Figure (cartoon, each protein chain N blue to C red):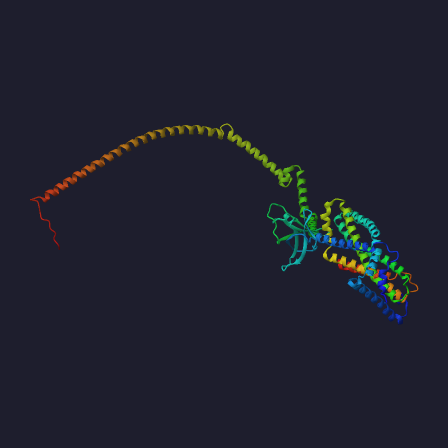
Length: 317
Length: 263
């Protein structure tokens, strides 16, 4: 008995197109190579083959940060978030893989921000101000700043509310601003009165009138004083005569002083002579002293000689 | 017994109907398991089996591939253009490309490929149901049927995979050309976008989903055919065998994939 399977296998299918097996193999190879190429491309796109260095960003809030998202520098992706974890101190640690070829853009002075707009996803951005700084080390940890539009809105609303309350307080009927404006109005009303600025400054027309009276009296006083001081036989004339007399007195005093000067010169000469005389007196005294000592020695010599000699003895008690 | 007959039957027949329904699903799963075992057993790959599989792959994939690729490219082009222009008009152009890749490559293309192959597979089975072996209960006929079914299951799975992967790659190229034109300078940016979309879970989900589409399309019509052989076609049923169940299973797979990816 023959195997029916063998029979069917050897029997060619009726109306079969040529090279079916070759075509099937081609299709299988094409499919497999496409799948492999696609896998490799996705792995390349995910950065599996890149040599990277690690950067750790520490944030208060990592909302919106997901593994796989990009970190950009000047709009270009220079890193990819690998992992987001919660540190023991309650901060979020965002581990970013930066390809070595892009790591040159990140320096020790670089600043990192997380920005979340109203529309769209969260973005991590890097800013480098000084590109000549030393490059960022592998495994460096940096604190990330938040630039969050959503978080700013409540603050903005709170500030706006305070501003509006202040504005409302300023524009109330009993507000200081209104009172100030009323005062300004009163002041300008006074300015437009009979005495103008003076009335405004002094607080009323009555005061301004008194001030004008006082001014008139001061004027009269000044005229009288002028007459008394600078008029004929006034204080100014008397003063001028006194000054002339004083000049004469001063000249006399000057002559007296010159005489006193000559007397002093004389006295100086007398002083000099007295000093010379004093010097001579010293010499004379020295000579007298010498003569006295000689006479004394002579008397002693005579006393020791006979018959005047006497025995010198000491008697003890 | 179809599910609608279950609803309209008397309550005392519900137990039997449920048992019948469960047994039908079980036979389908069994056939799927047998097909997988056959596909992974080296002894299956006899010359006859290889020839049959090659013929089925030729019919299911090789003949369809150009038409399906052209059709999917045209429809994709329209969808890409609509998405990109809309995104641009809302100032969200950086999300347009990502959306195109997510919607077309990850979701629509595999589903369209599965549907297309299912349609063709159903037609093929319908034709097979009228073949000279119909109603023949001899050993030779049983052997032939088993071999053909196993070959058809493998071929359909391969067809779904190949249609999906070829169209996906084409759509990726079309999306690039639409956004950046013929310039090669957008390649880095584009690669990063694709990398962002194909996270490990998404990529694994994409592969698993396509495989399961392939299996569902391969097994469900075959199981339905076996049932027709065994129990005969229902009097009122003019539908393609297993079509409702296939649609249901495809929907469940798609929904499960979406749920895993986005929730």
